Length: 298
Ligand code: ADP
Ligand code: MG
Image (cartoon, rainbow, N blue to C red):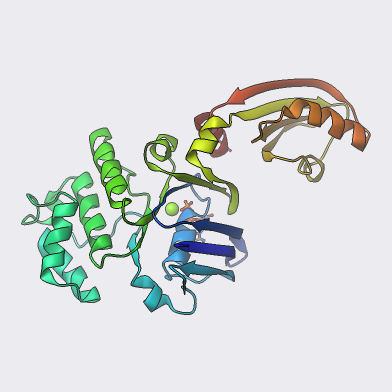
């Protein structure tokens, strides 16, 4: 297993940023790490790369315990942080040489990486002269200099124009051929274009972890139900396959399920078992993209 995360929780003072998150990434997978702003994506990535410690849980990257052996683990990890912190007054090649010195990478490898990310014609320029898309390539080159097995990319495409987006996605896909890649984004189409697997987190909770193909086949059922009495969250959350629950008003819930079963019948059974009635029920099926829009809208 390339990445193995078990029950990771992280608090910033009293605020919970991650709640018992677990997932695994197999070798060679490209995983889209998706979630609205503030979901905990960057926090998870900083924990994976050994830059911050969780309050509890365990993290292995290429079978090395990141919490116990951060330096050893970092040899296997390439990390492009959010907002790509670059020394913009440096020349591209000079910056990469500087980064390479940290990992004792030899000169030939630097040229190799410059070529791999398509920076050959820009390598003599100062970083600030480059477009945002090319600056991202510099960040990617820096992340792969020491030939890590695992790449952690925090929102590598945010702020790029449509052409640059396509270029960077193509590059991520190419890099993913011989590496495990975990990259965060809040753009659903991106995940559909690049990933093998999708992990969605919301408010620090992992809510979906599935192969992309499975998720694309499964349409999401969104059911609006009006009960005869007020039903509280602890009750509706007992329903199987529930992904999102949103209280519309006192007796009305909007429930999103990820299941091939028709959940309408289950809701009737649920009401009966708990001694209340369904007054009205409407259902629609949604695609992955509208599920995500739904997720980010609240
Ligand atoms: P994302 O990358 O998905 O936008 P983050 O991991 O940056 O989410 O943040 C998750 C939550 O933790 C947010 O509510 C954020 O405000 C909070 N948070 C992140 N970093 C810190 C920090 N250094 N100190 C306090 N709170 C933080
Ligand atoms: Mg972030």
